[in-house]
Image: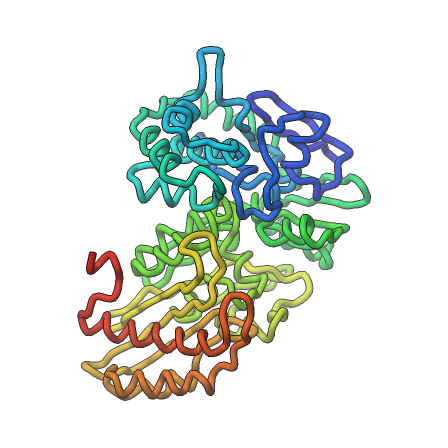
Length: 480
C-alpha cells in the first residue's frame, strides 16, 4: 500500500491513515493543515465556497488546471496532483490581483463565500476563461453569494481579465514532471479505515481491477458519489477511480461520429458537442455549475442512470451508441436501450462504460435541445427536450424525440414521433404529436414541476422547434 502523495500550496504532502472517503475539504480544514479559508457551505457541490484549484500533468509536458469543489472531492483523488487554496494567493508583495479586484469593487460583504469566488476567478484567469462579462458569469455559475450580489463580483472578474497571465511554461514543465513522478505509472492502491481506493492507469488495468472487484463502486468526478458520502453517509469497502485512465479521457472524431471516452469531463466535452449544434453547447453551458462540469464525466452522467440527467436525452435524440467493457469483452448497444427502469441500467457485474459514439448531423437533419429549469444556472431540469428530425423535401422522413424529467428514465416519445413521420412539420403535425405525448409519458409532480406543467412544456418545446425552423425568432438573444 502506498500513501497519498500530492503537492499542497507548493509543498509536497504524504498522507496515510485517513479513510479514502475523506474529502479534500475535511483534510484542508482539519488539524493537519488548518487551512480554514476553504469553507463548507452546502457539502454537495452547489455553492462553491470550498473551491480550490487542482493541477495535473496534461500529457504534453504542461499542466491542466481546474477549479473543483473540495467538499465532494475525495482525498486520494489528489494523488499525483497539485492543489492550491486561497491562502496561497497573497504574497509578501501584497494581495493577488484577483483579491485586489474584489476589495476595490466592494465585492465582499459577510465574506463567507468570498474565498470560493476568489479561487474560481483565479482559476478562470489562469486558464484564460475570463474574456467578457458573459464568460465571467459562466465561470462563477457554480458559486453562490447571499448578501453582496453578483454585480461587483462580475466587475472584479472583468477587471482581472485584463491582467496579463504570466508565462509559467518552464515552471509548469518542471511541476508536471514532479507530479508524474509522484503519481507513477502503475495501479495506485491506498488502504485505510477498512476501505480501499484503487486507481488504474489504463483501460486494460481498469478492466482487470474491476473484474477482480466487481462489487466496487466506480468513481470519476465524484459529483454523485461524493453526495452519497456527505449527504447519505454511506460507506464503501472498495472504490475504483477511473479519472486517471488516459484511454478514457480522449475525444476522437471519425468520418461520421464523435467518440467520447467515459472519463471526458463535461467541460472538455462542451466544445466538441457545440460543434455539432449550438444548442448542445448551450445545454452544456447550463449543465450544473462550472466546478461540477470540471469534475463530472460523460460516462458518469450516463452510467448513474438519472431520469433528470441532461446529457442522456440529448445523446439519445442524436442516436448515440454506448460501448461497455467486461474483462476483455466489449459490447455495443443503443444508448436508449441502456436505461431499463428507474435506478436500473443494462450494465452487468464488472462491466463499465468505455465510450459513447455520437453521430454527426447529416444533410437534411435538423436538431434542437431545450433545458427548462427554475434557475438559469446550476439547476436541475424540470424538462430536458431534445429533437432530431430528418427531412425529405418538406416532409419528415425520420424523427427522434427524447426527454428527460418526463419518466423514470431518459426516454424517447415514440407515439409523438409516429405523428410526425411522413408529414410536413406544420402546426397540425405538431398539435397531433403534442397530444400523443400523453400516451408516451405519465410524468410525476414534484418540487420542480407538476405533471401537467411537464406535458405542456414538452409540447411547447416541440412547437418552438417548429417556429425556429420556419424562421421565427424564439430566443431573447434573437429579438433583443
